[in-house]
Amino acid sequence: MVKRLTQVVLAALLAVGLVLGTTGASGEHPAEKVEDNLAGQKVRVNLPPTNDPKGVVVFFHGQGGNVNDKMEGPWLDALRRDGWVVASSMFHREAWGNPASTDDADRVWEWAERQGGAEVTMYLGTSMGGTTSLNALLHGAEAPPCWYGVKAAVDMSTMGNVPGANGFIRKAYGGGPYPRERNPVDTAYRLAQTGTTFRFVASPYDPYVPYDANTGRLSAALQGFGADVSVRTVQGPHDDPSHYSAYDVVRFANECAAAQGAKG
Image 1 (spheres, rainbow, N blue to C red):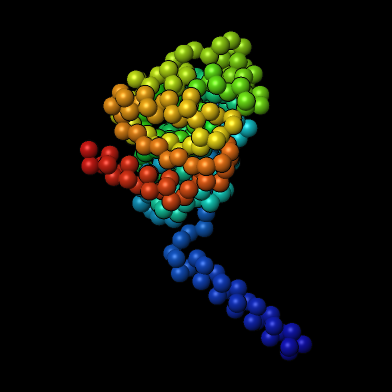
Image 2: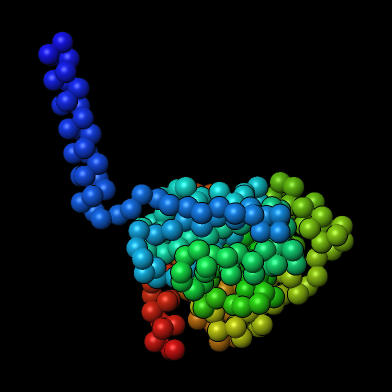
C-alpha cells in the first residue's frame, strides 16, 4: 500500500514538472479559440498568448476545406504563437470567390477584430482560397495590406484537373460562367491598385493548379502594374509539405506589417 501511494505521489510530481517545463517556462497560454455563426456560416478565431496581438490573419480554405481546415495544425499555429490572431470561416464552402463568400469575408473581418482586439493585417488563402481571398480583397468593404497565397488557384479557366472544380465553379455562379471581374488573373490591374503586398508560394510541378497560368501569370501581371510582389518556388505536388513553411509565413506577416507601419 505504501509502495503504491509513493508511486502515485511521484507520478503527480512528474506531471506537474512536465506542465511547468512545457508551458509555464515558455509563458505561453494554451491554445484558445472562439467559435460563432455569422449569417449561417461557421466562423472561428484562434487567439494568441498575448494581450497585445500583432494583428489578425484571415485564413481562406481550399476546395473541400471548411472552417477548421489547418486551424489545428502547426503551420497556422506558428502565427498564433508569434502573436497573431488567426480567423477563418466556412465561406460558403466551394464558393470560388463568389459574392456570398466576399460578404462572409466582410463579416469575419469585423467579428475577428472584435474578438482579437487587433486589426486585420493579412489574408491567407490556399488553393481555391486564392480566388476567394483575392475577390474578397478586391470586392470587399476593405482590403488588407498583406496577402499570402499558397498553391493559389487564381485562374478558374485552368481548373480542369481539379476533381469537381468546374462543376463547383458553375454552381457558385448560378449555373453559368463566372464573371471576368471575379477571375483574379483578369483583375490584376485593380488588385495592384489596392496597395496590398503580395506573396505567392507555389510549385511548378503542381498537377492541379498549373503554375504558369496561375502564380506565374498573376504575379508577373501584378508586378508589371507596380505592386510589391514576391514568389517562393517550392517542389512537389499540390499539397506537398514544402508549401507550408511556418518560418516563411511568419516572417512575411511580420515584415509586411512592419513595412506598412513605416508607410503609415
